[in-house]
Image 1 (cartoon, rainbow, N blue to C red):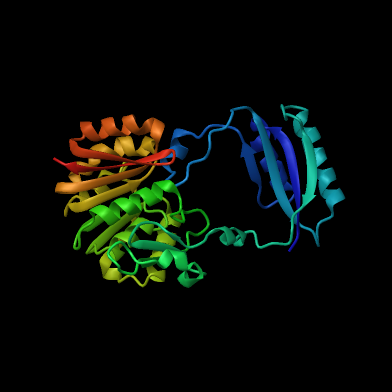
Image 2: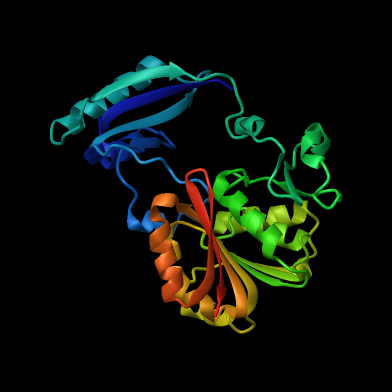
Length: 328
């Protein structure tokens, strides 16, 4: 299906009222682009493995929407939008207040990104392959491990908005698990996203994994990936929750301490999360943290020290770092 894209160049202050007016003429969904920094609430919700690049802050914004090219009368819609801009502009700042039209290609936009997700080797023992491909399409990921064994293949479909595991932050966690996890360990995966770290841990010999995320969509994506890897349902618990705002969740998870806690999250979440982790770990347990830009490493290290962790090891990859440490 081909779509006609209407894009309004406006300003941040006008976005809400324009959204309302577009809804009144039957526009069912809009896309907003602006240059505002993330709020603290947004940051706390970002249990992801790729952070947005910083942008130069200004008040410009774009509001876009799409119409079916076979049923849309572009001139009529354009006239309606221009009338809205004239009306809103009579009592509010609307920035440039211009509208442009373009036609998209005939593509499956929901699934088109999949062509860029290829099988890859995440660590010595773990290879990752999308569910819609076969590992042997990339035979280089199947080379034997350092001990001569075949790597274990994790099948993943990240869903609409969750990580594929290819970003440095997730690779750092996977490699730490590959190095530190012992058969029979119990693992807590905080901010599990698509479930990559949890499934990795089970492939590496963990006896049980508990995976938690604040986003219901992430929990659903993780559950589908557990199924795609034929994980025994008795081997994991998966649920939605927030350790920072719900002490009952912390109490529930601390009843049977874990051997490893892994958290691939932003420093803005890692720093307040870290003081809670000792309640969740057994004595001598391991805490793996990632999602950290190198420039914020000291901030996270200070939180680890303050929480009583020792043997703190920093591992860099590109612009990112991960920490592994033990509970004294």
